[in-house]
Length: 292
Image 1 (cartoon, one colour):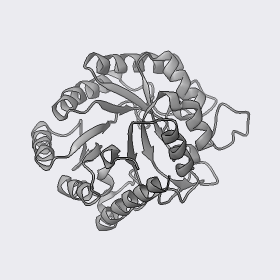
Image 2 (cartoon, rainbow, N blue to C red):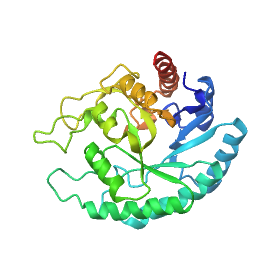
Image 3 (tube, helix red, strand yellow):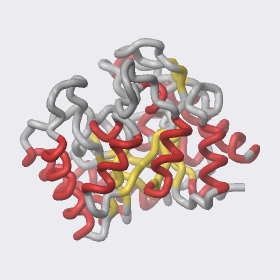
Image 4 (cartoon, helix red, strand yellow):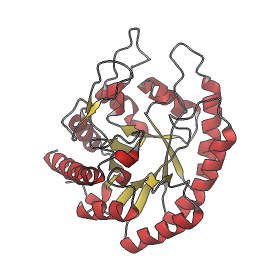
């Protein structure tokens, strides 16, 4: 049985309110959160006074922040965006990670350009080298997630990043391959195979995100998210392979079941449903892991 000390989650999917994030975490019997949004801001973008209060409250509650789900080079930023914006995010994140004792920050490789256009690969590598170096110099680890960014085009793209960017590690999200085309294969570019992707990159993976969904059948359509092990992300198979192989990192839930994190108007979200589904998701993951 895997220790609950290795389980965490993006608790902003339960609530944007820190007290409810803490409550959901404790209801699961967990002691860790993968931090992203608190209130209206990402954790590295919160006003300084708000961050200080949140950090003190987390200490008081005995909750660890084991991952910064940062905005750094994410799917919402193009590769020709002002690099100073990225560097400022890095410089804000570092002291906050140090304050919370957080060693891992999730980064990306900037938004995907439409396939067939110049992807500016060398500029992506250059920027990521600087990002990773700044975190490394602070004793911190930057790990790239296979999301809707250049490195998410295929497992080969993720591996190319690792080769080109010294010190870069990987976060593997089980659900993201389900709704992305494999751009390393011939046209018409099949959907990615989550288990194949995992097996290709696993030597470099230091953190796992659990998301499950069904294939959207066509590009540009949000997939149908499910409880873990009930969709097409091969969650059970991936976790079994990881644990059989000696994976000893954290496992984070990112449900997207009640609320897609990218929802345009969070004010219209049923947050009680989000809270309940987040807790249920965590319980389902523990049951799944017990079965493995």
